Each structure stands twice: as structure tokens, then as C-alpha cells.
Length: 576
Image (tube, rainbow, N blue to C red; front, top):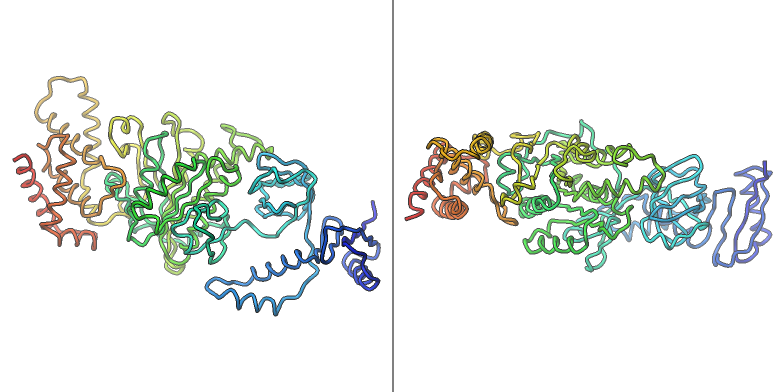
């Protein structure tokens, strides 16, 4: 066994008294057999560094500053003035002999570094490379540590040093982030200057336990008729949006964000692996419709490294948890988790993890479950805040049985399935009523919507079955023809322009009118115009009923009779 040696690094030789103190410290900590050797290092301008095995005691100016910053970090400064806190920290602080472990980079490339040493490093810990770039431990083996790099790996060389920080990955959070576009590390990328953080939140956090949750019962209205009527989403729910490429998945999420204007709900949009131009266009759309004031955009673009795409949804969730813990409601969109899984698969293969089904690692289910389980409605004792998650998954050729889609379907509380055939036939949003489901259901619906929706799903199911049965028939009886026209009218009603969310009273008026067969004789091409003019006239003539529906979420039988009578009279005069 080789003799352990302590190496003292400094620009100038230590004095006799300093050498005595170092020797006493080494013998006290490591035993009398450890010898001390001084090595000149002109890069150390102020102070000393002491290396004993893999541990480094840093008494340089930079090392003491790091100690001081940790001392400040340990003090809870949320809601407090920072300057008095720093003054107190300086008054109480004394420099200590704290060892910092350093390792050596063995290989680096593709956003991954393999490191030797750092025996006490922990999973998820942040490491700092010699160039100042940070990384996170993602793989621990007997001989090497696998680390993902948050930056340009070309600045890291094999043989360079890397040290532990003892901290897990975290992201700055605070109200100042509202209306801003940030990257996966919480740094602004919208050119509007720095963001003053209120606190820091760990990107990986334990999901709330059962005792800390309460049932989902308050609706989160998307403003989309086909969703709010048949597949209601509650605050604290996880509803998957799934479908092929270019079927309107992001459009549904954007409409839901726009509809939160004035509804005391903070929105977070996480873009994973998208083109920067697409994200910029989306931000401009939100700004145009006044939605950026309550929205944070977290972007890990296609040009960003895989590690940044990997941590982006967790960073977005951490931002949401900051607001949820204050008792606020949050809507978070992950667009999309298919690209997130692909980024994680690439990282895992580079870390030499064994590939499984479709080359994904075995823990790809846990990758998304630990993310989505953090969405919840907290109990009143915990403040009653909520995170509602709308994860988006892209399918290939409508294959919902692929690995990642089936995983996320089993994690979430329902799915909105968008069908390509419906989309290209002009049915937009292209929601497949048969395959879509909300497992929260009527619990997240207002009484007004429950009364108004009536037998809509049943009527649409009967229409689809009859449409298939009669598609090759030329001679239809009057009852069948009326049933088909009625079903086609319902489908036309569900077509909704993009960026045009409906209020609750508009949906109620449309549904009650349609299900009472008031628009039975309206031509298919005129149905959208009919409903638009109907709701506008009803708002002018019966403003008190509209206010009651929006404010109380309910209406009486007399109000329903008023809507039906008004709709039928309006239909009779429509072509006059």
C-alpha cells in the first residue's frame, strides 16, 4: 500500500509557522503517517490549496468565496431583504477547513462526460468542471461517474479536473418569471434582461403524498367546446393530448392557455426539442392574445444539447411548484414528451445503459411517472394550490400501442385523442369522441355544463354508427335522414376556430340549442354562422342568464326553456 501524501499548492513557499499549522492539521485529520510536500503553482494568486488523496481544501480567494456563498444559501431568504441577510452572514461566518472532492475527466463528448474519482458523489448532484461549466451526475458505476453537461462540451478536455458542489440541480423561481422566456436552467433568452429570482427550487422533487392531496373537483376550462363538454379537465388533473404529427395538439394547449385570461391561473409552456422559430411564433401568438402576462415559457430547442432537453420538463414543473405552494393554480404543458423520451434514450445509450424495448432504457416509465405525479391538487392544509398537466405525445401512424404512448396513457387521468382523418376532413379540433376519455369526468364539470351536455356523447356515437352503416346506401327513409342531418349538425357545432375559446355561457347556449333540435333545418354550411349570431343575440337579449351561468355555473329549468324557445324562434327567422 502506497504512503498517503499531502500536497500543498501555492505561488510562494509557506512560512515555517504556516507549515507547522498545516502539518498539525494533517496529522489530526489523517494520522501521523501522512507527510506534507509543497509544490509551487503560480496560478494560485491568493491563498493555498491542500490536496490529500481526492480531497482538496481550498483556502484561495475563490474557495473562501464559495464557502461564503454556501453560508448565504443555507439561510432561507424568501420574502426577506437580501442585503441585511448578507451582512448577518458576514458577521457570523468564519472560514472552515472543508474538503472539496475533485475528480478527473476521462472521456467527454456528445454532452456526456465520464469522470474518475469523486467516490462520494451522489445521483443528481451538480458538478463544476475546470472551465466553469456545470453538469449533473446521472450514472454511478464502481469505477466511473457518468455526468450530463449543461453547456458546450468542447470547453471540457480529457484530463481536466471536476469538483463536487454538494448541491442538487435547482432552478431560480419567482413572480418575475411571468411573461418571460427562459431556458432549461432558468436563464432568460428573450433579450429582456436578467430576472430577479425569489428563491431556488430543486428540479427533482418528491411528489405530494396522498395525505397532502385532495380530490379533483374544480373545472379548468379550456374554452374548447368538444373538450369542456365531453372530456372535462379539473384543476390538479393530468390529461394527455395524443395524436399524429400536425393534428392540432399544440393548438389545443395554446387555446387552453389563452382561455386562462382573468381566471387566476398561471400557465407554463415547456417546449422540448422544437425549432426556435416555432417557439418564437408561439410566444408572439400568446402575446398577441394577452396571455403572456400569466405565462412562463421554458424552451429547450432542437439545437440545444440533449441534457438540456432532458431537464426542461422538470425545470418547468419546479417553477410550477413554486406557485402551487403559494396556493395558486397552475397549468403546465409539456410539448412534447415523445422528444423528451428520445433525448433521454440518447443520453442513456451514451452512458452505456442497456437498451430495451424500442432501444429505450428500462426506467423510461419512471422518467415520466415521477414528473407527472408531481401534478396534484394540494389539501387545504397545504394551501389548496394545484398543478394541472397537459402532456403532449406524438404518435407514428396513429399507433397508440407504442412504448412511450402506452406508458403515459397509464400514468395520466385520461387522454384527448386527435385523429388525422378527422383533421384533414376539416373537423378541427380533430377530437375522436370514441377514443378520448377523462377519468375525472363530471366531478370537474359545473352543474350548468352537466345539464347542457345531456346526451351529446350518446347522440354522436349513434350518428357515427349510423354513418358507417348507411355510407353506401342511396335510398334512406326520413327518420334515418333526419338522424344523419342531426349528427352532422352536432359535428359542425364542434368545429371551432383556433385562438377563439368560448365562455361557459356561449357553450351552454350552443349545446342546449343543438340538443333541442333547434338547428335541425339549418344548412350544414350555415351552422357556424347560425350559432355565432344566436349566441350574440342571446347575450344582448338575456344578459342576466349569461351572467348567472358564468358566475354561478348553473341555470334553472326556466332558463333552459328560455334558451330553447329563443333558439327555435331564431332558427325560424334565420333565412327570412
